[in-house]
Length: 310
Image (cartoon, rainbow, N blue to C red; front, side):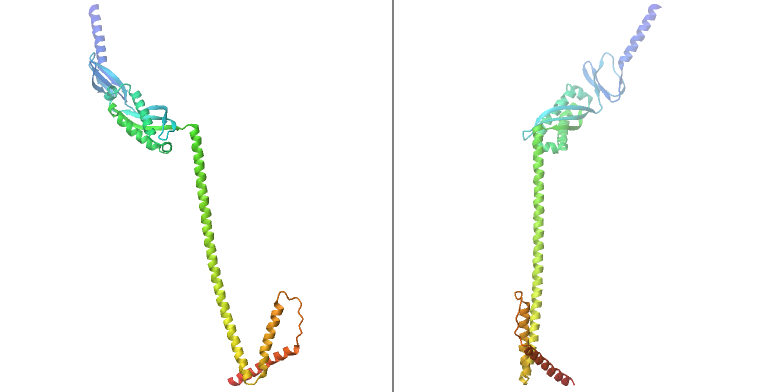
């Protein structure tokens, strides 16, 4: 009985071990490659899987979730011979477990070195100014190149991001001076443009002022000429009336011209700036006589007009 019981127990234990070896539980987010007699046969998906004990064994246990790989800082020489330090990150995901396990040895190390090499290639073909201003374009180029290169490994490169670009200190100082000079240049250009615009506006204002002044002088000259014309016309009429009076035998009309010239001469002498004292050997009776002549002319003229009206 003891031998039979021991045999049963032994068979039970052996069967349990055999069943355990034939069952493989794969966690979510993982995939296992299965090898039979050392050769890949299939991929075990997450969940319950049955294998043949002693013949099948798990080859590689792969993480199928998206992973992050840090790219260490490295020196890159740009197209314009500037040496900078660059680092970044790579986001990737395994899509084909068999390729990732058997197409490349040490998948993460290969991906890292491939990314670093392409960073030097892509950024080395660009000027420093382009590197500092076109990070998105650099990321897109790197993503396209590295994703295409890792496709045979069953990888999908989802993103590549350049984290930091560090030029040398002397180059940073030189760039700062250059930026300052550029800003001062733009400020000088804007200031010169402002002065130029102000000069143009000032010249335009002076031009309009000159035009208006000339128009004013023209108008004044026209009005002055018109006034002189009317004055001359009035004098001509007065002269004609006096001439008619003289022709009719009225001698007092002659006094009109004498009194007129006399009064004009006195007016000019009185209004002169350099005349302070004036001695006037003037006969008042002559002036009164002249004025009397004017009165006589007026008396002779008005009754005639009244008689004509009557």
